[in-house]
Length: 134
Ligand SMILES: [Zn+2]
Ligand SMILES: [Zn+2]
Image (cartoon, rainbow, N blue to C red):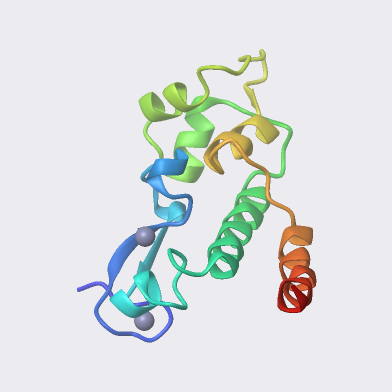
């Protein structure tokens, strides 16, 4: 049985980059969350701050896992546990250089055609008082 990573209760799989955002099925993109921590008020589907936090965590993990500039499909497949066929499909719009695909392009695609920034999380807090004044 899967256990919630936050409270230890029985859990389901959550895709950090949601499937509708282009997220694919591989271990790093999966988080085990109980119904409350998944779809409850403090879960990533209801709370955009939590959603963003999980995405930043994933992006940071990818950056650490891929320190080099270029990666071949074989290497990516091994490191990320993604099938070569799924990787080729993911990278279809990017140039395959002789050294492989650009790490930045790979991360951009894995994050759902987005690069997230810690600043987004800071701005989330900055905007709150503005909303309260309105
Ligand atoms: Zn939980
Ligand atoms: Zn989910």
